[in-house]
Each structure stands twice: as structure tokens, then as C-alpha cells.
Image (cartoon, rainbow, N blue to C red; front, side, top):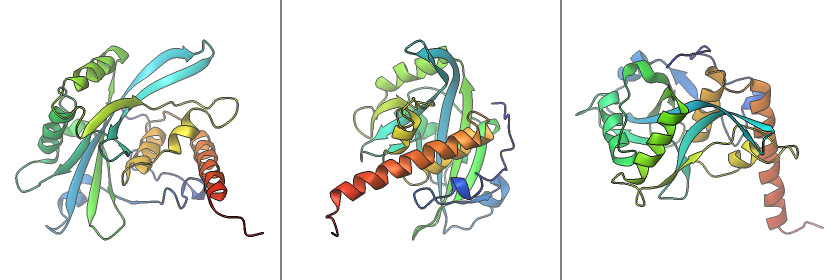
Length: 226
């Protein structure tokens, strides 16, 4: 994986930090390894590939990024919790990936970031990222269908639409309107920024459009105060 941006950079300014996607504290891998036994470690992988295709022959696809629909109806990255008593981060991650994808092994060279999660449980979320060719990415998708967890804990892989249609909602904003597990949405936005896969202003616009859509949907469900 070749980083085209500073992996230590913050997700962004106030434009990128919202109630829906709160800013998380980033720590180094070394700092994460020094955390005590009271901390749990989750490891997830973002697999992506440059995509020269065009939707409807006119909308650039730019990149294809894999996420998955989980058993609980939430979107997330492939991966899971790693028991540091028995596994290194990478060995634990590869074990989980083998169950959900059926192939591919990541290494420490693919490590991207670690963030401390908020809430009652003390979890440090590690994200790994590897750029593949589009053919390799497609092979992962095919292999995943035959993995042990397919149809059980993993209901299927999905590609993230990294474009916004003329209505300013279709594509990425609509995708961000879905429900994500824990830190997955934050990690997606973080990775897209630090890997220079989408300009920060485009990320902010998509997130704002998604937040506005969710707000309007909620207002329709709530009784009118008038």
C-alpha cells in the first residue's frame, strides 16, 4: 500500500466533525500496543482499487472500495476483534478475514491508523488498507461468496459509490445515510482523506447532504408541533 497523504493527519476541521460522525482520538500503533489489558482491539481492512469506469458512461467511478453488510444489518469493513493474548494484530485480522473473505493476507505494512472509541467499552480500532488491482478486487468478491461466514455473519460485500450525482444526494451521500457499525463510517471518511481518494471538501459536502437527508426523514416521522 502506498500512502499518498499523511496517515497521521486529523480527519478534518469542524466541517468533518458532526454529531453523526464525532471526531475520534488517533494514537500511534506503538501507543496502542502499550495499552493495558482493559482495552480491546478491533482490526478491520479496507480493500480498494482504482476504477477507470464511468457510470452511465459519464460519471467517473474513480475507486472501488469494499465494505460489507453484517448480520446485524449494519455496514462495516471486513475484520473483527483480536484477542491480543493469543494473536498479533495482523495474525488475528488475517484469521477473521479468512472466515469472511476466504483469501488475502495483510501485513504490518498495510497498517493505516488506530483510534480510541467513545462509549462504555474501551476499544482501540485499528484500520488496515491495501490497494489492489480491479481484477484482484473482483477476485476477492468472488472468493467471499464461498467463505465460511457468507450468508451468516457476513451477508455480502458492497462497493462504496464514491461519486455524487447531479441531485447532490445520489451516490456517496445516500451511502453515508445508511447505518454503520461503531467506527466504520469515521474510518471510511478518514481513509478516503488520508489516502487522497476524495478531496476533503467533497467529503464534507457528501456528509452534510447525508446528514440533511437523515434530518428531513426524522422530521417526517415526528409529529408536527403546530
